[in-house]
Image (tube, rainbow, N blue to C red; front, side, top):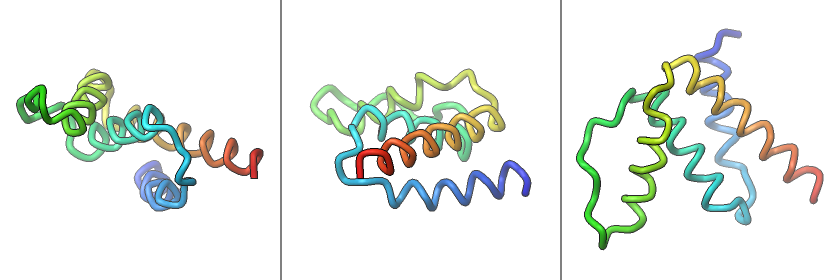
Amino acid sequence: MGLQEDFQQYAEKAKTLPENTTNENKLILYGLYKQATVGPVNTSRPGVFNMRDRAKWDAWKDVEGKSKDEAMSDYITKVKQLLEEAAATA
C-alpha cells in the first residue's frame, strides 16, 4: 500500500483511540492531519477567547514546515504509538 492509503487507514483507526487520549496527543494528531490534507495554515489565528480553536490552530502551525508526505508519515507513527499504548494499558 502507498503512503496515502496507509494514511487513510490510520485516520480511520485514530477514531478508535480511547476517550482518555490526552488533549496534547489529540492536538498533535490534528496538526499533522491538517498539514497532510490541507497544507500550511491558511487561516488567521482565532481570538484569545476561542481557546479550543486557537489550540488547534497552534498545533497545525507547529508542523507547518513539514511536507505532505512527512506529515502523513508522522501521523501514522503517532497513531500506531497511541494504539500500542492503549493496548498495553487495556
